[in-house]
Image: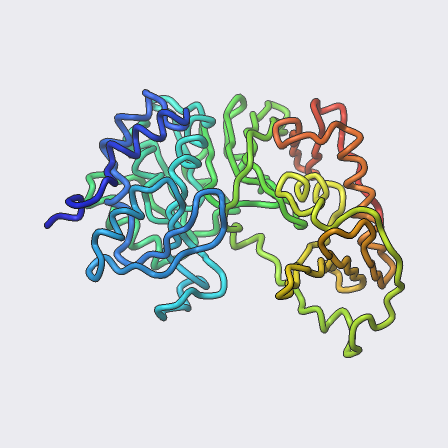
Length: 392
């Protein structure tokens, strides 16, 4: 029995579903057929869920080929590596570190790239090689450079690409540095998220060229941004929609445990108690987190859940000087808050939320980003309307 037999999953069905969604366009269909996803998925996987960030149990192709095939031809992401390869056991690791992205996201980003035959393209994050194969078919492998930081992942992807008949220039290196030896490029695409556009990407892109990348603030929330590079060395453009990618390794941050903030004392330590009418539930949506994150710098949330459905929303700053908690309980109209340190983190989050409300609760598509050699600015609706930062 082949993997296809006894299952409705197939390349044809997935292509049809993607085209119905508008993710896969007719000009990318030949690449989809020439580089089918199953050629670029390893034998050991942890399938994800559409619109979610949780992985299912491990599937080994030799043990359950049907489940493996079904996962490959489902419109969902697939985790292929945990903890930078350190995790090798049957269970899930701590942090997913490589994946084969959700097909809807793959083709939506490729469509946003506006790439044409003959364009020179730089891809940041080779991963399993599927995106590189699709781009190779579209622009020609001689016009693609793909960079992967993990040596083992890069080697596996290179073999899959070669076995499928694609030979782009596959480089092992830090994607934040781009790859200047083959610059300039017409297009740059990142398959990992960033919190700041590496300026090397802008320097290595021709004026008028396009950069497509998932961008998210430290706080949380993330969306794909499409930037056009200008002759003055800046790049600017709008966000396109929600995304959830693994962070570029050069931009990962190490987050301290709550005990570091409490300094050995039991909660609430030296925290000051108050109440709020704003429910912690109201600030947990992905787009709301994004809107908060572009105002509240260098802070992040964490949720501590309880069996009865209540939870505590923890807020911490990256400098390990301030923390706050807000307790959620169902059917309440007031919620307990505790804050400690020079920054009043819950007050900052609440102020950011109220600003978002006053702007008409904008989605990702109303935000934009401008990056220069000196840094970057997030704006609402137009570049002349920067989002005001909240200073702690």
